[in-house]
Figure (tube, rainbow, N blue to C red):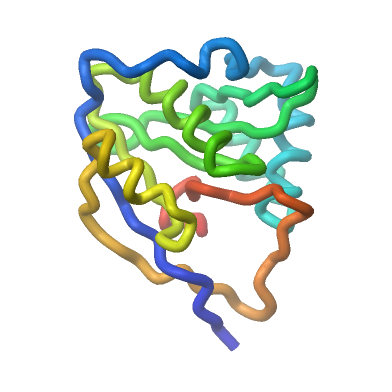
Length: 165
């Protein structure tokens, strides 16, 4: 049976000329050697393995890692999409971590059209609105059978794309 898993909001903006760089000290660009770590973070946050999807996104996008106490605790990917870029997935352990990852990618996309699809219930919507990311649509997130369960405090804050939920 298909089950409702929540609502996803699409938000859009043209990147501002300047975005704060407060995340520069704990967010770094990911490289090929980080792929296995990103796969582990994604599996913990999403609740199931998505190796093929994440490896393809890493090939075509730019990934950043959130590093705390010498360990990677979150990641986000931005890639070309439509008229500009899409940010997602974003996976980490806290709202603040998600904001740092998103801010780091937005700072690299100044002047670009940017989209992000976030879960309505996660509480990032107000913050994204403050940044100038306007809500343009909603979609129901559905799952067939039991919903995947994330590990500990890990959580997926932004989906790769509404069609990949």
